Length: 194
Image (tube, rainbow, N blue to C red):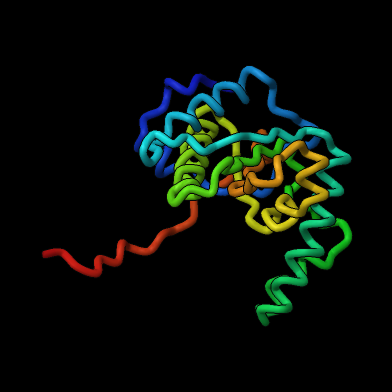
């Protein structure tokens, strides 16, 4: 851990956090740091105190590589089916491309129930985890292209995810390689203010 979660303001975390797509090689997040991140995640708001979240931590390089290959295959097939612009998906056909950007740790936030607000609760937990990670000097990135692979029955079985549980938010965590800068954002579009 490079710094304490307690040393950064909420504003600094919100405005400084960004998606990191380059990580120091072969670095896994230690158990104490992961416990701190998970503790922050479960402090998220939850509808009717449902707390539907469960977590899978992946740090095995071989498993991450196989999962990346599976995710690339499924995501490319789905994009073709939906007629997405092929030029933006060319990277998925490159053999050396890893959807996890070679990060040593993947945290998958899963919904143990199919409740009405379970998915939203899991995404709120994801944001807490990512803000806490940033405050600790770590980088994160949601890897949405891995969700389909994580929800395949054989992958769920391999990872110990029960069949009725849904993998919602796959988030890589690691020490950034170089400096990642937040991207510009559009001004809020207010539809009504009455």
